Image (cartoon, rainbow, N blue to C red; front, side):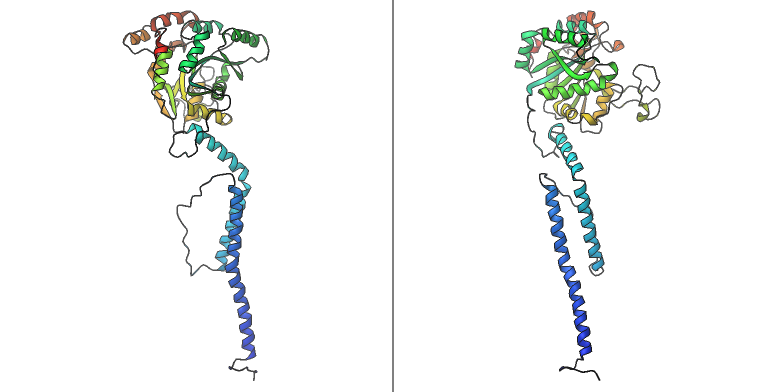
Length: 401
């Protein structure tokens, strides 16, 4: 008969109870102490990962529901393991996340200024920027000296008057050109000599070429943003007549809008046939043959607000270049919260079209011939257009901005 202690329990049952208590204690210890240790580990990693970054953690929209009666030790340990693995994955992707955060901050801070979703304030001007109302870049080429001179003698102010226009009205006008394929060659030296005489040429870090207009456009806006803190940035071709007062007053009406893209909006055909003008090598991206492009401003003249120009400045390396520069520009804003403004005064015809509109009290902003994608023989004919459709010498000084 097994020996008993007082109370009637045998030593055998006492031993069984002791062993059972031991294992129950082990289970209890695991359930009570593993979670706090793991939680501290996760919190420590989160603090390290979030140091220097202000992030908001958003919960999953749908919470998982667990039955407490059926959740055993195995389920708890699996949750802990999954959480630990997630933390390790987040830590491993931290460098890439930091790059993404920086890019998003750049877009939010400037390109999307005014959006209710943005809580990052504008940091102000870049170092070395000059304040301006509008920067007008006239796209030109090495062979276009006569065009440049004709513009200087018609709608563009020169010398001290140009400086006065910049100081009093904040209107900056520059011819825009890059470099030749042979740096320091005769073409570059000729442009430098011309600029030393007129002081109205902006040189770009870009190699000139007709098929490089998309790249030139991108570099122009990025360069202009780095030099001037303006409300608007304009690109215009050197065979287009412009009325500065009409342009400035039109832009002043959109000053309070954060992201505007202004011009004569069009949607031309995507030309898949090789050898034709404006051929699109990447036509397959736009669907079946015969499709049209998305809406974009015609390339003779268009305007970007500060936010959009700065978006280009911030994201130069990510913006794809299509064969045609006006299509490229329009593509960069597809998917963004941008207001497209179709202003037909930016694509008037030459006389009699612009002349009739001027006589009716609605002067054109820009005039050119559609058949030539600019004023036909502009170096000779821009004088005639200016005489018939120009707004007058004093108009820009009297413009209310």
